[in-house]
Image (cartoon, rainbow, N blue to C red; front, side, top):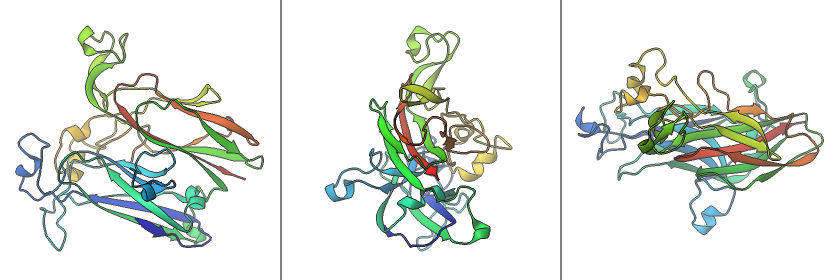
Length: 323
């Protein structure tokens, strides 16, 4: 959808994304006989969801814009296992589980939010019924509302990709005047085929046993190292893993999942149903300081690598800097 971004001396820009499945059958029918199952009113599954800025020609050419290397991911989240919001005019849904809303600070990316741009929303739905989505941008010029991460002086659109490993490196040029460089990283693991998670046969078929590890649906429930290489040297290494998917109580996530309990409590590869994606548990910060590795006044080669990969990974990197 085309968006005309306003001009201003912005101190904070927030992106708010709302998704509603609109499940309208009565419990437990709304979840299907195989919970979570199919529902004619909406999608009761946990899905990859992304809001992104279109920066290439995919709209003009009619190509798929999601996961295109030239586009910029603004937000990655995972839907809950359906919602059943009771919204006009249809009035469908029980109203027990409202639409899920996420708000994310995108202030550093202000240099990209100029003029007319296309905004895309993707939810990986594999059933006939889907989601209603809403996107809102809130701009502020007030000093008392300033983001702790102000508008960057420059932004490098590195990559946005869905699937397997990326073989290529991406050039990132940092001006000599830069004093701080950060990378904003989203990465989430998916896939349901069984492989060994950990141990001496990590990443191999479960058929041969998994000594020292366990057999899991990979890569959704598998611990997989993610790496960022700068000039062929690993400078960031992380095993994306969330073990806080139902904080406070094993029943807590029922309140934002119409279907799918107790699955909403399970730990996963960088995500939880109903939450913004992050590579670690607890207080989340997708921004990583790369100043010592993406040094000013040079062009560097950045490559993203997942040494053991059995499923599909949705991943994106943006680099921005301050002068």
